Structure formats: C-alpha cells, structure tokens
Image (cartoon, rainbow, N blue to C red):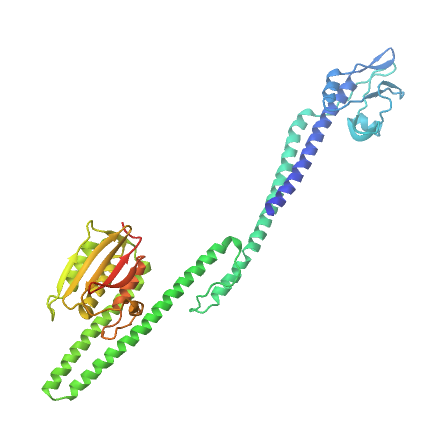
Length: 437
C-alpha cells in the first residue's frame, strides 16, 4: 500500500511536471515565431506590410493549426486573421511577448502578443528585444532540476514515514508474543497463544515445535528420574537390612549367609546403576549424537567377547554367525553396543541353558542382529509388556531395563525390537532400518 500510494503520487507529480515542461517548450516556440513575425513587418509606401516567416510558421504548424494577425498603429489589420483577438495591453506587449489562453472559432488556443516599434516617415524607431537567451538557457534547467529534487526529497520523506508506520503496525503483534513469553512460568512450555503476523508465522510455529520437543524430553527425564529413584530405594533398603542383620548376628554361619546376600545385593545394585546410566545415555544420544558408519560384524564380535564372562556356573556353547558381505549401517556405535550387550546379558542370565548364538544379517536397506538361546518357552505376545521400562518377567530378578534400552536404540535407528520362537530357540532381533550404508 505504501509503494502503491507513493507510485500514484509520483505519477501525478511527473504528469504535472511534464505538462509544465511541455507548455514551456511550446510557449518558447510560439514566442520565437511571434518575434520572427514581428521582425518581418516592414513599411512600404507609408503602409505596414508583412513578409510571413515560412520557417517559423511551418515549425508551429507541425504541431497544430496556426493563426496570426498584424495590426498597424491605426488599428487596421494589415495581415492575417482579423477575428483573432487578444486581451494583452499595449504597454505589456511593448515589454515583450505576452502569452495567454483564448478562444478562436470555438476552439481553445494559445495566444502570443507582441508590439514592435517600426519606422514611419514621420517617426523613427527600432525594435526592442528584451529576451535573455543565455540566462534562460542556464536558469531554465536549474529551475527544473530544483523542482525535481524537491519532489524527490518530499516523496522520500513521505515514503520513510509511511514505511516506518507500516513496519510498526505490522510488527505490533510481536509485543504481545514477547509479553506472553516473558510472563510465563519456567515449566510452561505450551504453544504460543498470541496470533502472530503472517510474515513470522513459520518462526512462531518452529518455536512451538521446539518447545513441544523440549517438553517431551523434560517429561521423559522426569519419569526416568522418578522411576530410577523408586527402583534404587528397594535394593538400598534390602542392603541396609542385610547390613543391620550382619551387625547383630554372632553366628559364623549366619554371618557368612548375610555376607553372601550383601554381595548379591551389591552386585544387583551395581548392575541396576549401570543400566540406569545406560538408559539415560540412550535417551540423550537418541537425538544428540550424530550418525556414523558402523560395521555390525566387528561391533557384535567385540561386544560378545566382552559380555560373556570367562567363568560361568554352567556350560554354554557360544556361536557367532557373521554376515557376508559385512553390513555397515549409519548409526551410533555406543548405543548399538549397549543394546546388544543388554540382550546378551539377558540371554545368559534369564534364558540360555546350553546354547547362545549371535547372528548378523542384512536385507536390502536394513540390517539386523539376532540373539538366539535355548531358554524356557517364551511367549512373544507379552513382548510389549517386557520392553516397558522396569518391567520384569515372572521369574526375573533383574532391573527390567535391558529390553527397554534395546527397544529405544532400535527405534532411534529407525528399526524395531522383535521376538520369535523357532526350533526350540527364543529369538530376539534388533533391526536397523533405512540406515544401511
């Protein structure tokens, strides 16, 4: 609107300036032709006569019809159109060309009048030319330039004022958004309610999306902290009870029994603490860590070597089946390592009786790692329950975080954690989809 208004005003100013310039140029032609006609008036036999200047009249007739009239001192028309009349006074006409608008034969005309003194037998005189061609050539362009600069300066000032007003009016809703955010509580991450201007609507939507993600992350961490504090209290209370019993008993057999229980409780607490830290790390790295190429064969081999203890209470056959060619996926090696380590630990502690197999495979743009064991019969229908944080099976004494960590890692890599039972084996598959490199 500002630019359109300025364009209209500038157009009107340009039209007015062009009209004035054209009128001035036309008047100069008309004045020049009038002077030439006056200079071509002469006295012959005591009578004024005219030798019409053909060039001057031809120049004017190229634009319009030309009418002229020559009157002697007696008021007699000696040449031209007698009906052509002018309202200029003789004294004004003696001073120079007088320009005026008039009507001739029902048409609007521009009239130039000039009086010139000529020599009769009874008097002598000479024409009086009061024009200043050199001064007009300098002053005329300077005056037009001053007018143009004045128009430009005025329009620039108006445009600045209008633009300042328009910008202030358009950005006024930002003050409402600023006030709403400034007056919020620290825990209020709800979307902005103030209606944003169209120009910054995408920015406000992006801020709302960021606050929603931040709220989700905060809620996730709050739930994790609440669950972790609840889970840690139980083994700490049991450990405190065992220490209290140990301090009061005097029987060597009882003391040995209580020490064994304290040792088990301490190991469980250490395992729970490590898994809680792993769980927090997986939650953080799901969005913060950058993906990098990960070779699944090498990673699974190293995790298997470090996760299987050298001494176990039972004989377990360990097998590793790498894929050929070796799959390489885009992901976070630390998170995948933790997920696989938890799956192997669960299989050794709660599943495998005598057989554990780690298999790697690839299918198109997805890759997978399978942990197979010959443990007790597993019902795949309860998988959704077991992957929830701190969920435990009926015979499990673990922390309930192993499968949850593996499931979160799989989801963060575009895959899933699935369960199956085949040929007497429980199969847990960690798949990574859309990330094969």
